[in-house]
Length: 430
Image (cartoon, rainbow, N blue to C red; front, side, top):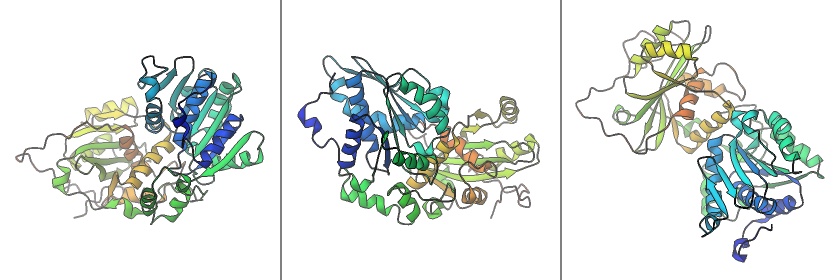
């Protein structure tokens, strides 16, 4: 069945680079889309998936770094583009957001999934078209493509689309070189936001200005260049996210969380305190603790006394037995899986860049870890892990909690524990 729409639908459907990619898709090529941020790759993916399902009536798959990102990136595009079809007296499409599936009445379903949960989560029946979004940031990319996607595509002689902003010269860079060498199979083109006519000049100017202190990040994310940062994750200017700890009056009216990374000897146990401010719509890491060679009861005593707020949740990766012991000591931890750590780091990095996550300048140990932290690093990352558990798992209520009464005791920072002489302890400053 042909992909049919009213003539006005096709007016300004694609800009030049997108149209070239569409023509290559129609010719049966696999697509390698070397697209920077705000270049319209999500729009292109949505259009190609809808067209493919309506023409071939076969299942398709969109895979992002995480399932939540798949929802954020593609689902709004599908709702927008399929609104007319869904709202018909006799709808031709059905959107099931709880399953992240778009089903075509005459056959074929588009599923949205995350690569962070591993190959087994992505397995399924045959697919006609598979899209891999932000492929440069995937964990186990070769295993997923070779052992999961390739067999799925074989059923229908299907096609695969790779799109991403670069991340140094990693597997996405190597795939780009392979695509350029194998033009009988791959179509390769490159686009940036400057090629995208659907972003206003003012919008482009504002995006450029946001990178003024980070020329290498600008080259990678906006210009789509393969910049080698020597593996550094937090290669952004600290002035963007480091600021003095919020005043106690502000912290009093925040929602509070803790992240706990339990270390087995000789590794330290680390804890991070985060607050979410509804008025600012920002997070702040406002406290830290890192100490090794101590009993669980010692860690728990210090952590419980350091900041005396009512905590919405405490997240940790520790095993059930340790969690039970921590709960008995008053920490009340919720377990969290590590899954794809690179995807979680990318989330933190984007929150720092967008100004949604601030780190108090007093948190010197965390900032020291971040300064040297590299992709795929294992070790000297305990505070980063603790922060990761909160930013990945915390959920916020839809409205701010009611203000606390004035008669409540003022929450004070721990100052009477003698931890300042311990190189792994909290520096309590003044």
